[in-house]
Figure 1: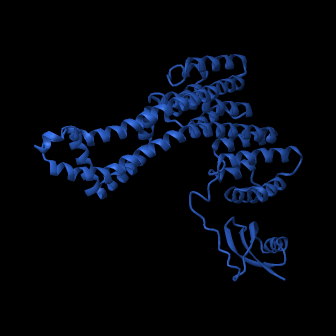
Figure 2: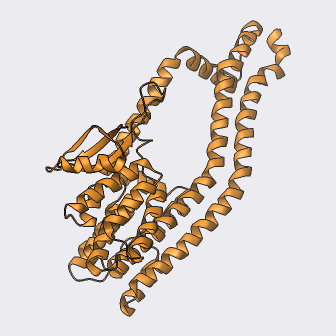
Figure 3: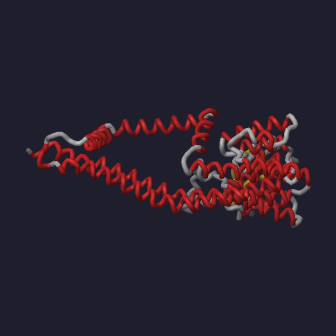
Length: 408
């Protein structure tokens, strides 16, 4: 009995086509498509009309996301298969079938199709920056040229896993403060909208002069309850304007510089940026990527405009024949210890090793700071919560302390 399959395939011109085809098996469907001059990318059995099954709903930005963790798992499995002697195409075919992330699976199919037509693996991956960024494709290209693709993929997996682990620790440390801050906003909003108006009627009956704090709270409540639409419009507009501002080169540079100067958190952001810089440059130099190209990639993946600008300045100096360490001294964002370690690495010919040690050192520093911040932030947030709610209650009840004079 023939089954209907939905397919995505590329024609001889490289255009992706979609449609349905009837065949007894999935293999037969793929063979039929190849007979028509199409290269299958995906084949899936369609549900019968009366089965009651619904097509999967795709939400842009959510269902098509490719996480760094998924790419790290793909890299490690890919390296194992290549090292075991499997061909490139066979490895990609297996990985496409067993990858749980559907978006990544589709990308692997497209990469496999390009490789089948004679494109290099790195060039095929460059077409999908959503999954494979500039750092990834540059290292893969160097691995292809040097004949050490499996080692390169393992190094990429290690780098990605380290980044994911560090990001996860920071996120977990920030969850509690964010939750408490959200609770504070909720309580304050509830009091301003529902509680304060009840006291306003009471104060109107009592008459007399109200304290300044009470007047301010009543005014704030009146603005929020009467002109709530204006508050929403202003808030949304401010958020949109801020996002557009940081999307500009100048805005991003200014915002990143401000982040580095924040109390407590600025130091954490700074150390995280240095760790990322060190690990990325170490991975690129160890793989054999040319130093100027490596500098460009480090600048693009730095995650902080201040660090990126410093790296570009260093690149310009290196292009003129200088060492890496010398121009780094002119940028305060790089601590003296980092500059000295890089200088020693250049002199001894072990730059990648020194960079890895610097990255490991700052990773441990970040972990220690995250643990310390977690224990420090909890009591501070409790104090903030108590002070905010307590301050509002005091402002509301201050007229009660003088109720006798108000009644007279």
